[in-house]
Length: 433
Image (spheres, rainbow, N blue to C red):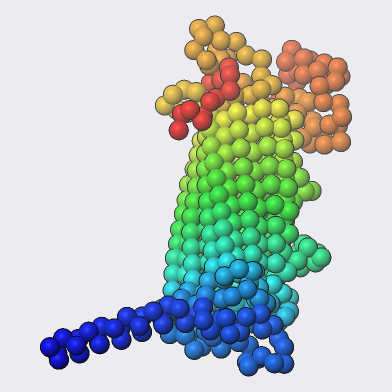
């Protein structure tokens, strides 16, 4: 009987200890509710003190109020905002630093980092791995979220707004990856930063359902391989994306639109190889694609609509496969040079190419493929591509006369790719995948 009572007492003690561990943060937070930086606060930085006093693995529920930063989290804890909770860095350093693995930071408003670009000061800086950053709002911070040698994190449903009062080149990036592989980036919104997402030496990341607008480049990227980008929107930026010196990139189901800076391009590939660009919508940009020194890429089943230039692809890019795309109402469908011959503008298995809205084609056997090959670069599109100031003459009687005269008397050769199997109607790729 005595032994049974002792066992019962021990079990009760263990249960109470566990409950205290998981409710400690909430009760303590109530004691420091809305402490700000007042002289009556028991600690100069009560939130930092709360973290230091917590046990590893604890869940800390932080009550509404404004808390002083910077904050450094150096043990694996869950830090959860209950209500409207702001951490204010006061314009100094990184507002919140995650220094060990296994931290969760959820539901906070994080403001006022330092502004030293040379120190990459940030709203949230990750120096560790296996963390969850979810549901936070980051404003008036140089970089929004900065990952340094940080992997296997979940960065989900955060809203990042940069310092719009700074010149765009003096701002930080929305989410910056440095030597940071294998992260999941899902459903974040980024605006008014320098670049939306910047990747450097960071591979095997999965980036989905993010919205990036009013930045320099929505996606800026180098020396980062085998990353996947799906269902993202990059719009109203100086440029949609600039991807360089990488391979194995997958771009699927993304939207690149309204990127109309001086060289505003939906997708730039510079020295990028063995990648897939599929099922994307690329519209209302100055250029949809620019591909330089990039080889063995597959560009298929995309809608390229109402851009000034559809694709600029010099001869430095070779052995690319380009088919099943809908090239619709682009002023200049393609710009290339005389030596660009090794790219294939059709599917070698199905013998089907691309749809070109400007093309006047014949299909006597009604198989949906033209009976004649198509050269998408006409005299007027070539001249407008070389001399954009002539755009006001597009489809004018003078330009149409030039096109007609060239067809009858081709006294010089215009550099143009050849689509040997152009499609009669737009390709409905949405029902093919």
